[in-house]
Length: 424
Image (tube, rainbow, N blue to C red; front, side, top):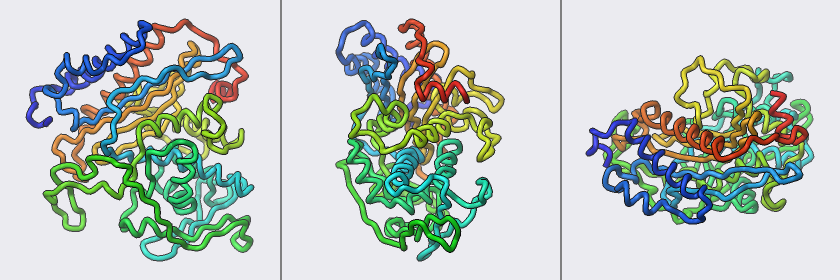
């Protein structure tokens, strides 16, 4: 357990984790197709020096190249630590929900800027009748999607969840081959138990409050898949806000969201470079939908005109830049389209990174668990001392590795994604 190794410093831990992954990278790029990780894990005595069950580090990395026509090609994916042990995905689940909301609008032939009204049914449901950040003063799916990626807005996600419901969300993900996850509850709002999250608000899309385009009544939806996960009862205790005390028993994650690292990794891929996937595996999105998502995923908060934000560039960018201070500005040639998650000591980022000057492109997804005292919901996690450093060093190592192994390439300037990113 981590608590029995207090002499191991944060920098040592991070260096150790990155060293193992870096050795893995270097061996594979010699052209030898094999997995050196088991031997590296043995050589460094990972299971003895650090308890890997505490950190739960998982990494997926996919270099991207371009074919002669300039189309993106996913190269071999490298992975470390992938398993079926539970980890809490936090806000990363907002990513597929935002995409599926735009897909559903297309199915219904409703414009993304059409006002969407969530009303309150049974307690503790609440209504969403206005949005002061939109031109009309009314909520809409396009603005909810922007809020999700630019600021990781919980309410934006919750309103889309209340409309789509867990049945549509999970069935659609499975149809696209993202079949090792479950999204079954709201985020960051009190009062909802497992049953309450199955009851969904009345929702309507309206040109005006009197003229409904499409409406759904309050409804009950059930979806659950245990997914055969281990470790869904975790830790030594948790803080109970109602009792205002620590309960000394494992925290129950059995009815919490779960988003497998592989599903997460390839959701980013499907959204950013959809042409690299079979058509049946893609989200049903229009060109306008993709552009909306690319812009929202790729902008810094300060670049957004609606909504307006003043957070630093790395506000929701962990990979490469999590450890930078609030004055740091990400270089203009670097764009990261991603979704992060942060809760219960779990820190996760699923990202596409591109250097618009050198042509380096890759997908990188990682998660780490930083909860030394093994108490959940107490607000005592090692995000800054360990998590931020881990993501920053990992991202910078991968970026530098790709820079050193690749020749500089000119990205196709007429490619829809590249053209949009150059214009941000």
